Image (cartoon, rainbow over all chains, first blue to last red; front, side):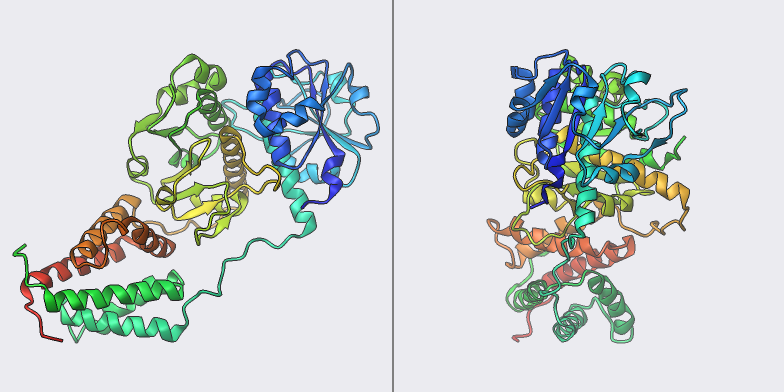
Length: 248
Length: 248
């Protein structure tokens, strides 16, 4: 469970035009543990079929979204606000990347503001925020879909929160890693069978076996996997004793 | 302008059902400098009105997308592949986060594989990849929309590339790493011989082969090593045809 700080960050969409986008925003917010959506003068129906279709289990976020007329209303009670833009504007503002600046919102009543699908935020609107982010993208097509931009920012907020909690990442499970003597027994079995079938010759066996050792050692086989490999060798031995050739 | 490495990473969608999703994927790919989309057995029309509407200036990526029937076809020529999953499966696979593992694809002919909107990838399908990522999300609703998941991964790939360009590292030596189709041919050989000697049974072969795939994939075998493994199988076949048992 994340701490309740995430609930203090609201996503503000200014004059969103696409119900599919608004629905997708609700879904990714729920995915990333955010739940306060504010729609400034929406240009579409945030409760309709299209928005709900994209929201799926995020529909509850649409239902309780605040609808307001102006950005100052949307920011009521906030201490920090970041606005997004996809343009290198002529404005003398410093554009930052999401990873760097979004953590600054954590722990505060805060807002992350997104503009219209086609025109973004006006210069006046941008200036309600204290900081500005731009998602870096390829010069050939730098304009992201609104819901995709929100997804990336919500993801970075969630990552920032996880980092802040210093939550231990899932570690590879070393419990099951085969002990070296179990592995050694497998290499002995393998060498024996490979000599028996004429794949190895006594004078070159050790250099060739080194290659197999390197390969298997790199994979850190588990005890179960080594048992599986040894079972395979037993079966080859069995087949050699019981199998009288098929002429192929 | 980014260097052409990014063009070596293909996005693979397996049985995508939603044309809006496929279109959104094309747009974010173009935003993030990727251009090779491969659709495995798509369940929707990637050239229709809905897909184009979402793709906007990414429509050219839809037009030149490859459509194939199977994941191995989609991975043809790739040396590295990462698959995505949203579930903590019971599978003994190590799930990593995108930021950590996606940079590993850079500089290689590589694929990033996404499953169906509703069911993701099957266990068998997952095992065509060498590594696995999960986008961390809130426990209350961890399942992201397909296009949002692709957006986050494409964004992280682009970020990784920017970072790599800012701090040039010595290029990994990947000449020797076996391509996935070479590796696949080995798995086919292995399955055939193991069925022949009675180690595998037809009804359990695929689940057991998954274990072998995981083991070998973890080791990133070189072309020479795969040749060595296949040589071993040829020799076992030879021995079975020529060896009349020693009674042991």
